[in-house]
Length: 479
Ligand code: DUC
Ligand code: ZN
Ligand code: ZN
Ligand code: ZN
View 1 (tube, rainbow, N blue to C red):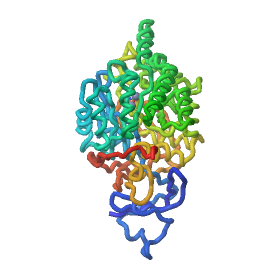
View 2 (cartoon, rainbow, N blue to C red; view 1 turned 60 degrees about the horizontal axis):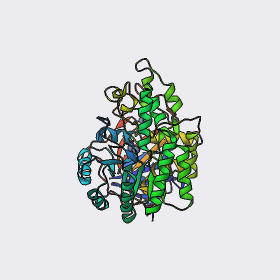
View 3 (cartoon, helix red, strand yellow; view 1 turned 90 degrees about the vertical axis):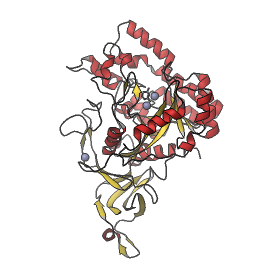
View 4 (spheres, protein in one colour; view 1 turned 60 degrees about the vertical axis):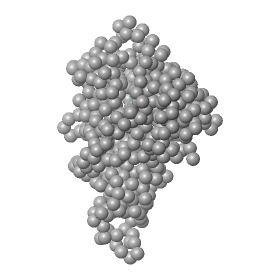
């Protein structure tokens, strides 16, 4: 099966040009000057399908390196299954996710990984890979971690927050980072000082401050800056490569920039919520149904930060300066009814997370329209760098011969109304959208996953099980 995408503007991390893309089976066979012929044959007449991408951008499919399908959290579980979440991702132009397999406290690492394979296998709409959460750093875990690269898992996440649940103390982090330094696996860090946050949570609740807004008050930026600095110093001492997840505080970015300035292998992601949403808006949110509890829709960790204090501005700037290299969603959806409402009267019981896997490509494209980032940088931070950061590049994150034909045709003249209900875009398994009312000056037109058209305008043509597990190599940022 051969497909030709013709007349489009191919956009990569390094430039744009008018070009035709020839796909043979699941891979890209050639990127050609428009209308060119191969050995005298007219290519368009020799393929099975021709897609006209005139006036549109042809980009490598999005790689979302941070999702949580079916994650057990706070007595419930993230509401998207691998089936619903990956389908929503495809609708939004993301063709690969890296989800987090979880080792819970007391569990063996490989048992946690096996559970994740069971959840995902045969259910995904697009290709998927895993990071491994290490929720219990023991001698047994440290040994098991050394064999993760053989399983195609080349990164693990530790938590400096959630004492008694997922948190590793500094000694445990130090030992896990030694494994990271030895093996080349990336240490991913949830950098927030959990013990202090937990005291602040308790004190706020004792003062009767129970609304969702106080979630962010308790998780102060100082405790993100402090933990980021501590993680950087531990990585410096051990020689571990470090990737800080869901960065939201401008002071945390300053720590990252300082470490990179002295040549340390320190990387980071931010998420759409820290680029577009703020604590002030969360405080102002109210509805007839929920009152001030409406703010629970935006309870995530790290929390939304104050726009007035300049965090949002700093996050956009960090993407321009490359102090932060990429954008992932931290997709962790919960419904209001039956899930978020566990925290009525106690914000600390609201499951943490926002559903965004469907909207990352669109939201960041709006960043292009708004003049925050260039078109090429859009592709870089949403596809190319995530692929390189986590050992998928060459297969994913690029349009070149030999790469998987994961391709999005994006229409800059289209429009996307994000939100719940008639005429809007929302395919995630949630009872609300944290992005209600967002209007995007662009539209995901066509999505190909390994050569198969899975989204064609308003039609979904993919199927459960189209997506395969992808083994990852070591980070291509380190070599
Ligand atoms: N951290 C995440 O990365 N996702 C969900 C909750 C959290 O604390
Ligand atoms: Zn986290
Ligand atoms: Zn997460
Ligand atoms: Zn559409």
